[in-house]
Image 1 (cartoon, rainbow, N blue to C red):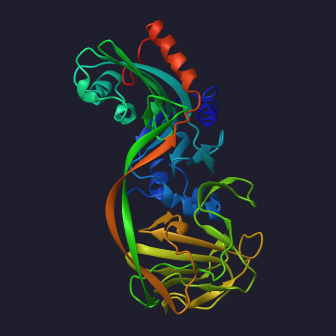
Image 2: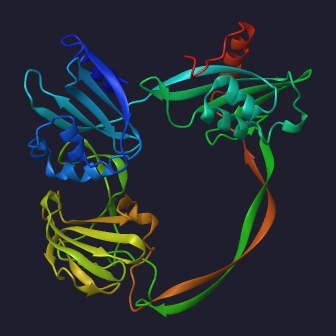
Image 3: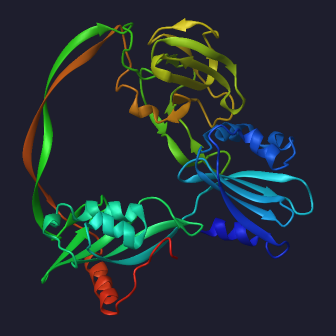
Length: 412
């Protein structure tokens, strides 16, 4: 919230200004945006090289905010690149110069009360009476296993306390329902909701529940690593992870929060780097703060990146096989010491490499698993521990006693 307040207050004492919200067009490039806002072309040259790669991460069809003066001049802009980070553009006072930064998105989190009188069903009535679709969905999930919805009748009542994050006064992300009270005729049921959104009528006790599981039988067969469509392997034979993929990591050199679109592997300088799968080398040269870089395009829309190499062993256009040495660990570019920064893109978007890479580096062949699944139903038990369950129940009872009005989103 503090960034929003800074955003609103920085210029308003000096200029009459207005905040507007817009949707970022799917096909709009960042350079097109600058041109449409009459921002000098030279502004792009002021953006640090390591920050330019985040321009392609701007969230298409998502809301962004602008502050303009009475003449329509852009004073500031907040443009999301993920759910937690955003681009911040600000105009220097009394000049045509603009500043660029990447800052965390700050949300305002507040507690709300809702009262829903049943006319049709919990979801439809909550949506109609509260006018927040995510709240309606979350409520349905919370009570589905704790309350028999088929026994609810017209005039029955549901009361609940929930926490909703907002940005610029509008609800965003999934609400967190804390406690629900269902009045069905003369019967009263309290449902306590855990972090996953599941509701329970009792806390502090062990409860049983039915879970569907797939029982599997595994067959293994050793196959050559050259096989098309084979599993991705690790880029080094010995794996030691020093920094994981993150949308908001504190940069050890820049001393600022920046997305970290890759996994860092610690290794001695000169350690061979392996192609994680068959592919074609699309880049093999110096790349700014990444130092010496090799990029390889693979089947299925994947492209891998190996940064900070001491020496590159392949050339652009070369075909490489999985497990082939394509370079050596180094510390070129912006680096605190010898390591590999490994990045992986899927259809042009950065993804967490560790969700794709195999657990072991490959030698001459690999063991391929063939799995047959059989679905079974088992009874499981878990102890229900929900933090502050009694506190939120007391809050709900007070709100009901004072006949507190529901917060209606569109109305307010």
